[in-house]
Image (tube, rainbow, N blue to C red; front, side):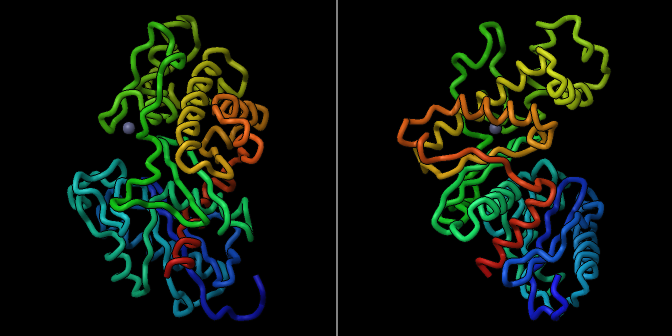
Length: 340
Ligand SMILES: [Zn+2]
């Protein structure tokens, strides 16, 4: 950072199920923190615990770059959905906000009251998508559009149009995990139709997520590979997490699982290509942080399964979401800086 005292900064806060992390952005658009600054999110202690964690991590991030709290002009807050565009947690709760106290809780307003600065909310998939977009396009960000699919426990997504997040009237735009995907030729003839926690069958998250591997893909593929060493892992959660490591080592069953995920993402991008016809399709999540040869194979398979018209393929691109662990906080800060 420069030695001159900054006049004003924006703090980005990414609140997840286990950790809350923070970043600091000056009003010229330069990030003043290079590394992860994170604390346990305490979301399972309810709002009081989560707010205390937010205060602590914000103070730690400001201390890291020697900036006093009075220089903070806005805060960008992001959380996993579902939540309203103004940061009210769903009245049915959410995966990471399951305790009764969170249902219908106005998280954005509570953070604003606690920190006494304006707080701008974004969904975590949208925030990471905005960060990927701005990093990729730089000064052209405001002229370009992109779609992001981020594979994690669920599938996070985002639609960016002319450099702005499309959140929708209810906050559900960009919930790309819950787009129905044609399963013809994706599933094996005897493979059960995958089910999603949202109540849909055959949507993107039912295939392209860790939860999809755990609940749908792995149970089927293990019947096809009765001698696979994953059979010896007792916990279904641990077994699902082990698939990526096998994929990196070229294991045939794991590659078939990831091939189905890549095909599902490609088919979602094919649908997206007829809606917004974006400049770039971003792929993010654990698989893209994997060993480079495996990561490149995966992105290439997504590209192969994205069925574009020649005129589209000539002008669009495929890229990775960068700095994934910091992308949410950074995107939330950027969104706050642009919309405060
Ligand atoms: Zn779903």
